[in-house]
Length: 173
Image (cartoon, rainbow, N blue to C red):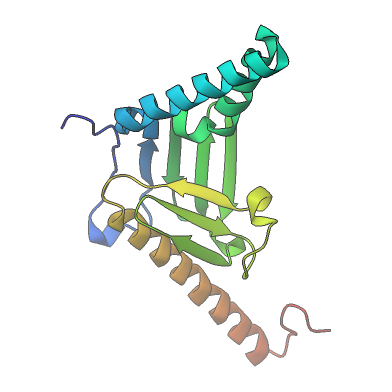
């Protein structure tokens, strides 16, 4: 399909909790008109920087700074969901969040936010994982919700077992 550059593995229902789900997101490639518009805006800001500062080096600096700020739009990201957590590979970097550490999942049609904080915070800019979805976001959202639900059920069962066996729960002494 033209313009579709995202592949999502969709394992059979019985194996979904154990089989990794992998997809690749590359917004600039998926939306070439938006990419051209963003490049035009970057070029305009670079030109303005060169004019105002009377140096071509400021144009280079402005262009590099804007490209760096928009790296997740221009460069591909690969995501992997498995039984342990979610992994984001973006260029040479690898970031992983375990399901047991995730406290909040906010999402829209194109992207989601997995946070280790239960309430929104400015720290989410540094600690949360921004997840770009494929065109059909529903299977990915369902997989994340399912894995978070399984993790919470397992944690609740572990706490329940500890209470029944007379051991203190986490945070109690």
